Amino acid sequence: MNIIITKNYQELSKKAANIFLNQLALKPDSVFGLATGSTPLGMYAEIIKRFKNHTYDFSRVKTFNLDEYYGLKKNNPQSYYYFMQENFFKQVNFKDKNINFLNGMASNPQKECADYEAKIKRNPIDLQILGIGANGHIGFNEPGSKLNSKSRLIDLDKKTIEDNSKFFSSKGEVPTRALTIGIGTILSAKKILLLASGKNKAEAVRGMVEKQSSAKCPASFLQKHNDVIVIADQEATSMLKKKYKSQNNFEDIIYNENNISIKRH
Ligand code: PGA
Image (cartoon, rainbow, N blue to C red; front, side):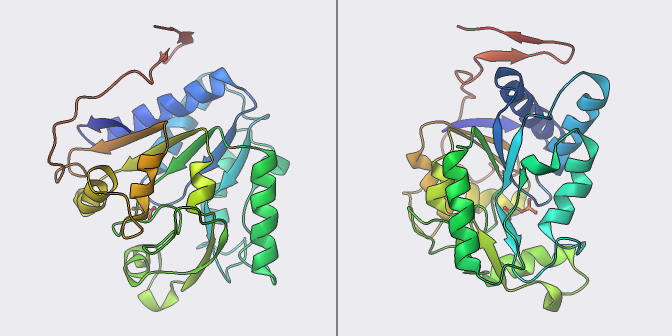
């Protein structure tokens, strides 16, 4: 794992946008795995800002989102589909047909998940964006999720319901189930970028990076992948015991705001 520790959330978002746009520059028809939640919002905002000032083209990009609440329609403002439309998709030039989402209203969730899994297999994810739950979840792979798990319907953890209630007017409104891609699906991505910000993520970040990988902290299974970048701010890394020197060996490409130059070491 490459750990990049940033001063604050703003710096985290800029660095994440660099990596995202580098991937786009390298491969204009990249497949991105995308995440919702408050953490990637700054990265999306930064990408949108740069899209407005420069010539980026997302028309050949394909996206697969990680998860969706079960029982919410796409047009429900609390759905993850709606979140992505408002905070990212509508604001750059994605093509609708290239956007893939688990359908939270699927009458046969098992088939929905199997179809999604098969589609990801046909379109392998080049860069998977992840947040991390305070309980160590990635996507909605709650504690107890297995290393080789695939897309499925899952009961949400109490902690997740509590944490996500910040987006709802009351805790009782938070759906109790969701569709999520699995840990195995996430690990099949070529490259993974996980973002973590704030004190309430410090324990999960420690479990992910320094503890033995186990289902207690699903993010710890990322230790098994050979191309993971974690960008986390000082608060989120405040419980790490070892010293981390940012390794820049992933920075094959040096991003520059005005043009993209490719520098190989
Ligand atoms: P957050 O959620 O970005 O809203 O903190 C992260 C997650 O649950 O994966």
